[in-house]
Length: 427
Image 1 (cartoon, rainbow, N blue to C red):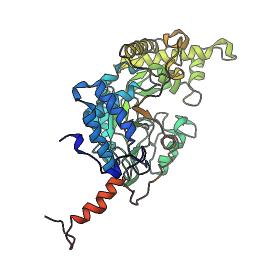
Image 2: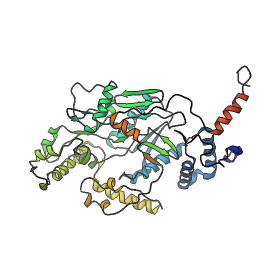
Image 3: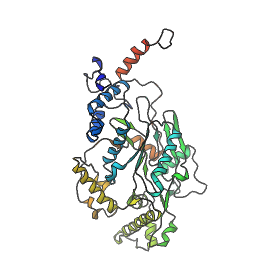
Image 4: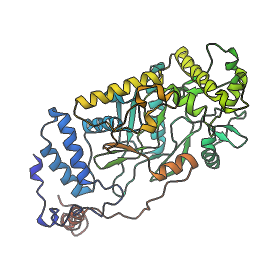
């Protein structure tokens, strides 16, 4: 059986416009144009998959029938990897082909989503040899949204108003306390927040992460013993969980993914930013630096030592991490490799250039393509509000959602005809 067998009735052949046969491109409805573009890309880069034309015919028929379509396992894996390849803000894309894809599309319940997130953390941590990985849960479909993970990353630290902890998550911390979470009896600056998962059938539920799923690194300095007295630590694996994965017009709202840390993400942003842990004044004081005026460059000197501590500590703990000079070289190698393959490599300069010593890294001294490519990872406004403020996702309601015109036609004409007058199915 081939795709050519799916010849649509004349009134459903799309002759009235690109959206004909679809229900107003409602929530969860796949865009046929995006589907075709993705399938053409997939088959062009995977010639062993056979001709694209047959698969495209099947997919367009499936969209007409159901409003969406299901990716094959190979399409899902390629789409997830291509989305990483297209991520303009990521400097670590050289190894995009090595992304491990966990297909959990059959998982919809909140408890199982949380359990698979914990398993993702264990697998990705890999005893310190961090694996790049993505776990893809059920997609949005017409009338049936997929599950949502509220947390910005699977592991984030609570922020209290004292102040104590990570100020970025102070609102989120209050929100999860309102949902029933209780901080440890002795609070710290690094209390791991619970996962918050919601589904169309379940309101937000809290799931504390098992201790064995949370690998952390205590921070020390190779030259300053006092650094250990600061009691700093950070988690081993950065698993982003608030971005939706969009592949060929199908949206996967819960698709946590990770690479490994570049040291400056921790040492020059999370621990150093004034609106995060703001540790530069304390590190400068311990170093005995003159902080009376900016011209002494005390911030710069404290920032370097903080980053030295991060790289040193992860190396001592046997946890994968990279420095910004190495990653800058790797990124330019990736750009060159993509050019040889005839592909553009979009990059956001403001994110690619490291936040420490940017001017002496090779990524600083050039321009980049800014073309928007798909597949992609997307952050929507609802996800930002949930991740930072604990604001619930809008509900779609429990009423029936109209299907595509052809599906409605079949349901209204063929299904009743297949039933006996007494309501039983015909044999």
